[in-house]
Image (cartoon, rainbow, N blue to C red; front, top):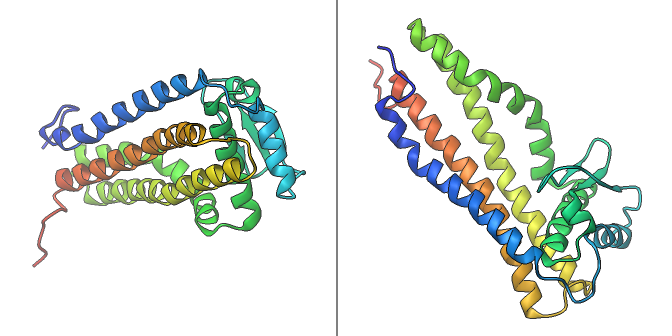
Length: 233
């Protein structure tokens, strides 16, 4: 049986897609809101990141500016913390929160944080799987080839596993960020703490939504393939 792009099982994914849209709108609006609120100490994101790294004995980790909006990341291969221009130069609560979050990943890496190590080991598999899973499944569906369909499902399961492992990594980095910012006096009152927490919580929501979309897509593939609910004689 041929399934079009708009087959009936698409309804399963709709809640996840709505959650993903909401998460993106939430993170953008929250970042914009707290980008307009400057922290009392007036440190830029780059200054805060470098100071945190220094206090943690991680002076070898470089802090560099990278183009793009909300493109911030930590590269464990080169030990470089990349900050977007708004975060790198900004003195807002949003800038401090994002900079400290990425610094949290550098600290995780240095400490050998197990979920981060697992996540790094899954990167090559997840990269290949995210590209090949759907094409293999669709080819198997068109050719009525169960082996190809199952292969596509296995590959997509690897993508979901990567996203699930990502959740504790991101949550832990955000917790570290709040502790570091508050404990070292980068944010000095309850309003600033709450503002940074709002930024980090909104960012975390995007990872939860992405995992939900993948989970629902996997359920959809299982239904289309007939594997879900099938009883082998």
